[in-house]
Length: 232
Ligand code: CTP
Ligand code: MG
Image (cartoon, rainbow, N blue to C red; front, side, top):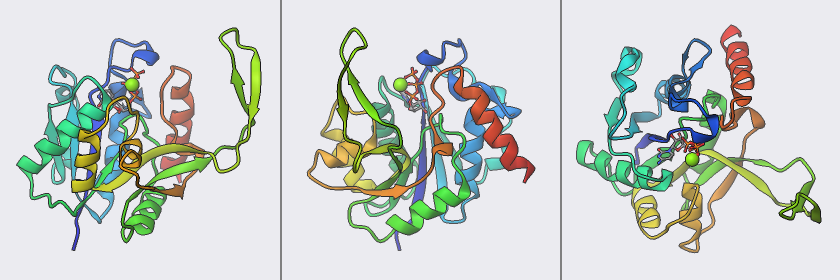
């Protein structure tokens, strides 16, 4: 039986957030941002272990209390210059540390998506666990799409039929994901690396609450979603 592991790349600096503290540590609903996704992932009975990939220069992790997750948590300081590099380094370090088989599933989840819900996570796992390629949470594009020129003038309205916005977790077997990431550069998600091998990952419909916190104005919305969920 294949096992399920989560891997959270958390070695970014959050440059678009514009705060000195890397965004994964910014306070959100009374916790550092990364706490929320870590909680959802480690509470899943299906997930055996959660690997957190930090920057080798990280000085913030130890300032917080993570004891609630100690049973399932592995901290690895091997982040790289890009997200893809952090994930690839993390995969190799995870294998050194734990019994990870080539056929085991790895769920890669951004530290910057704190609002992942248990329902979305279960839906992904249940929908992809028997898939040959793997898959990811995503939402169908709802807005009308405009292509602009460098003066912000519309050059074209793009059809949005069959267009999706990729989210995380992105779930692939260890062996395939490692091979895919080792063979690509300039990608912003794991699925693109798998696509470059000529494969077609499965899109599992999620919703907008699992958005990526990127800019300062995103914090208030994430806080609202988390506080409302915690109050339920
Ligand atoms: N990430 C990482 N290693 C990097 C860059 C990013 O592990 N070298 C992680 C981030 O910590 C985040 C996820 O990848 O959890 C998604 O990246 P993004 O939202 O772009 O975060 P940052 O790169 O930190 O932000 P920015 O692009 O604004 O600098
Ligand atoms: Mg980035």
